[in-house]
Image (cartoon, rainbow over all chains, first blue to last red; front, side, top):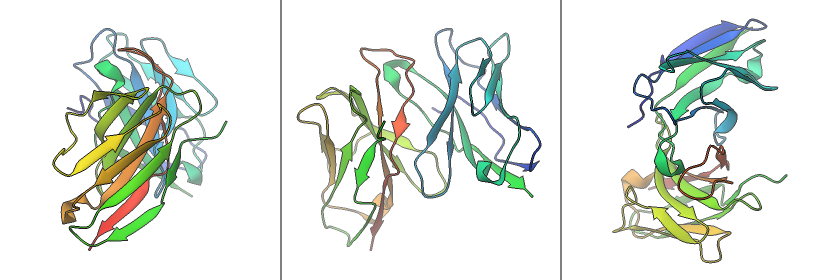
Length: 109
Length: 117
């Protein structure tokens, strides 16, 4: 039901860009892609979302391929506080999210 | 803006006992969600409310779980009787979304960690 595929884990050096990929090959034309992250013992934190155009906010950038079958979340300058599980979610009807198991990102000093 | 508030933060009970969790969403958010997150897994939707009406409760184990949102604001989730497999974090989220479809993001509380002995 998750409709997205992410690598289970990734490492990134502190200060470098972290690029987290997500495949959503069955996405429909009106489904948005959302990214959340979850730090231990906290609830998921909203990062960014988009439909088909690239998006940027103060936290990250979201790059969606032209065919919309995959996307990449970019954290431009990773810090130790960015260590978390990152979820890529495709919204389905009724405003419902289906989370997968996400990517565990470890930022290394 | 205040975030989604949940209480208690932690709860330990014995199996077959009952337990209740409380959620106060972000002010003005019409839609409220309850999720269950088992250790090592992503959150799983249990129930979705639009104002004080249930939109979807297809994943809620109705023989033991119940939820209500009487005045369209706060919500409670109850488990009675609890089983060992109910040990999890129970997350509440809210969003501005109205109607059948919205691109508004959901905002989550920090959850209640439930341990069943």
